Length: 307
Image 1 (cartoon, rainbow, N blue to C red):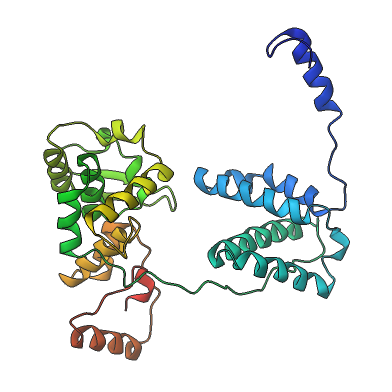
Image 2 (spheres, rainbow, N blue to C red; image 1 turned 90 degrees about the vertical axis):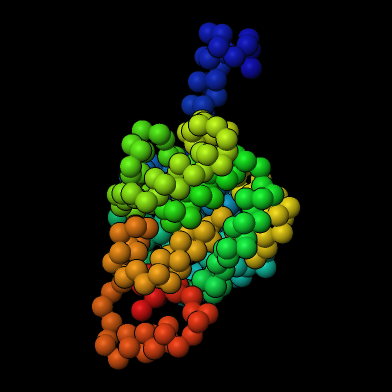
């Protein structure tokens, strides 16, 4: 490229090169993926999820970018995509399912707009069946973490335990959302608005435990999800806290609320979970009997499975 970035000759040369950039062949899957990325369906996703989709679209494009759209209605296509998912499952079943989900959504989007004749990924089930329902922070885990972890990690733990909110929503908290009595936030994933009164006490405790009145907003400039996950794992290992992660704190908050006999609607109001669908009286009675007869009973993080 002639000149330096920003020089007129450099910009002119760049525009000329961009104009000759090879466009994806029409009739291939890559063209549908590019149109999906330019659609409002992708824009409507949360920023973190958009980034995840873009990364997976690149992976899918590298593997199937030239796949002919005319073959989408062929029964063998479903098997080809399944083989790709099975290959990815050797490294991570969750990531294999996520890739399948993204591909299925793109094909569903294209099918709805008449760009593809069929969606071969419409059915496929899931490979990952794991659950972290039983992974709950104990009082001993909490005490060990406070005793060993760096002071700037105390407030995130306190807020998570008192609010039951997701990691990303806690990282976005500012002092403007805390008026000394209540904490107000809107969940980025669902848009649910949450007001926590008693969590304000936890916020004050966390600030006092740090020994200074600095804000989580100031901390968050240096704390993104990736950075926090790394230092959190190290802090847990140093404190001897094993088998639980930051994401398990949300389930821990639900569990503690259930153990003090908070009702499902009360828990949903506090944590922002959606209310469960109505179930038969007999099934609800069996769950209640199991809960009353087992001291180690741990309700599921997902409220739809609690009762």
